[in-house]
Image (tube, rainbow, N blue to C red; front, side, top):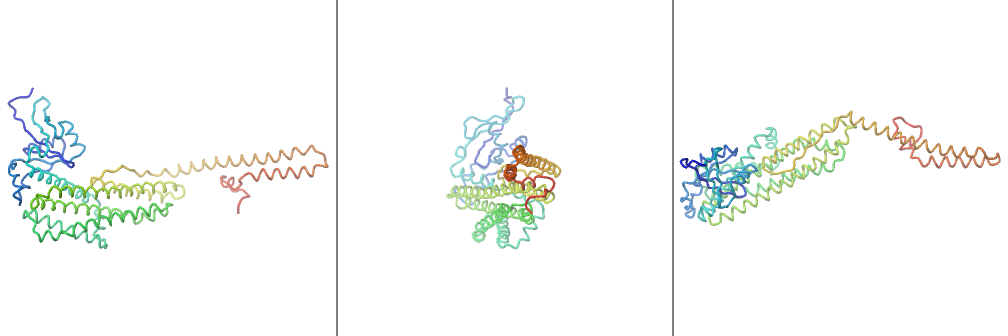
Length: 432
């Protein structure tokens, strides 16, 4: 039975499609979430009290703060364990001795906020999801080889150069917004072309990846596949970086758009927020489709290459190593952008001695079959010749001629070229 003298912490929980918002004492919530193994970000309603008199309704909840958690498999398990979103039955967090330490109230924003405030909270939750995505992409870009960053900087392509310029503009605007609390019309107007530039760069990079996929698809031999991979091993990582930077820059721009909307245009905040969410979903959908197709081609190319292990053992191993590295880099990229993909692995080719041994066994089996076929044909012809031996001398010439013809017809039924090809030594007949 719970100790009535021990105070309990009441926590309101709000869920949307991207995350969970825990409202209450931020330090208490963080300590508890840390115990659950969940990473959280600080949330405060002060972000809503900017600019608009309509949003001053947030002042009613100025004492509310808390933590935001990304909706993942682990955080979803927390919901299953302690309660249901929107339900009237609270979740109870207990210690091992049965002591109640927290009450979780799963509520919709409309249950605890005014309509204007609920809209603002939804906007901030979307903003926090975007900021989390931006951080994950940043972590991914830091984790990859610095050489890839150098390749991106060395790109002479105008589209890539424009993306790098836009990224600087957006970062500068975000810094101004963070320091001053506002972004003037002049600064905002400079960002107007940024969305189009990032979209163009994203589409361009995906097209480049598709071009590499098409070349790999058309290549049939290990030699031609290796020729494509010679340049692809550097180009693919660079274009994946371009995709990442384009998505990240567009997310940063969306955060600024949301802040401006709920500070100055709260009446259209919800429509703006929904538009941003839908546009991002479509954007990542295109990225996922392109990357999925690329991984399929890598797998198909590996199957083609593996078949040539006997004739080109070193080239096959080199090609498979590059294909595997590209698959791993693509998987790391997908994780950085939080894109779910089927896990694919490039299998190594069997050892050359194993392949050679199997080939020798197949050749021996084929030779035996060919020799048996040839021997049978000769025996049939000889049998015909034997039958004429008992005939009269007058018929000997005719019978002998018939026997030779029968032998010739029997031998003509045998594909001597195939027999010769299957033998481990050269026969003195067949095509020159």
